[in-house]
Image (cartoon, rainbow over all chains, first blue to last red; front, side, top):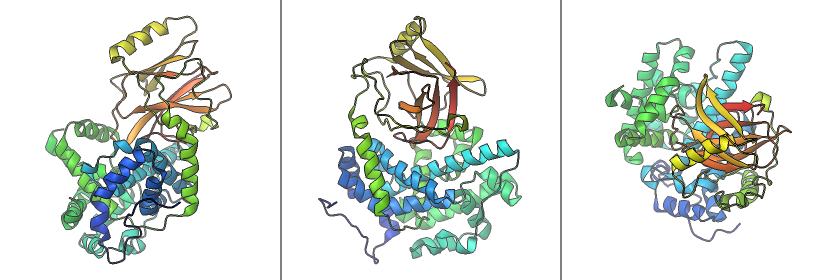
Length: 203
Length: 234
């Protein structure tokens, strides 16, 4: 389908992706309004821009291609019906869509795990996390890579299990054999460091 | 917990790493605290930068386009003005395994509401409807505590009355109401919103139960089973 307006797609390789994609932009506001007005081309533009990231986080959390595919569809179909709920003052559309996708994926994981645990009466099994190949270490943004490199390994591990593993901090503590308070602090401190390093891109 | 204590949970909330009582407490606090909302927004923006983009496929876009085309009629309908004699969800065609608490239905993205009526009026109408011959009255229970009551009259007027024990969700989520018919088809009756108020709906088909689920904002076509409560054998 031909788009009727010019938008920064694809993003040039020299573009500062982290900064631009995290901040609300005029394009975000315009696109959200167009989707609210039932402009299918606008939704397609959003999908072309952010559908890959939505799929990536859903697949990372769910570790299931088919379920991740369902989440991607649900996220964009939901946005089609409720774009007016997006508030540009609170962040970018990318962040909004990824937040919905992550929440949706986590809900599925916890629902499935909880059901399996009830049926089998077995403890929850933490997902395998291969930190050496963790997705954020392969990120294209040098700024993000440097920020992540500034975390302590235990902070990175806790955040990785929570965000990419879809675990609650209580489950992370159980998976690592650490006190809950310790894990809570690692996640909080790690996210504060990331926020400080990436603040200019996210404020 | 006080504000400072709750604010310390913002990073964990942004990563969806809270659950149970802490999640409930934080979300209740979040509703009225702009500082914590800003903190959560900031951490969500940080988290979103940790995700690596990959190509978006044409195949997926085609499926999304098909789904929004299927839902287009639903999106534009106003449940408050629909002819009650017209079966409201006749375009729905989805089957799910209710026993496994996996629900599916066709998207009904409009918010269920009661246009022009106050909450008290809807509650009063529901109370009256509940006394009519042939009306179905059921309670959605969570751990034995009623979180919402549903009333459906013989002529198809439905009411959903949330109790104070139904926890408000954040803006990324919504409660969604489903009807289960005699064929165990699970059909979306509409989206209730993150903090449901007394609302009306219409259902004139056969019915064996109701389900209340928590979904992403705007409602979904299929649910993976985040079921809040189910009423069966009505």
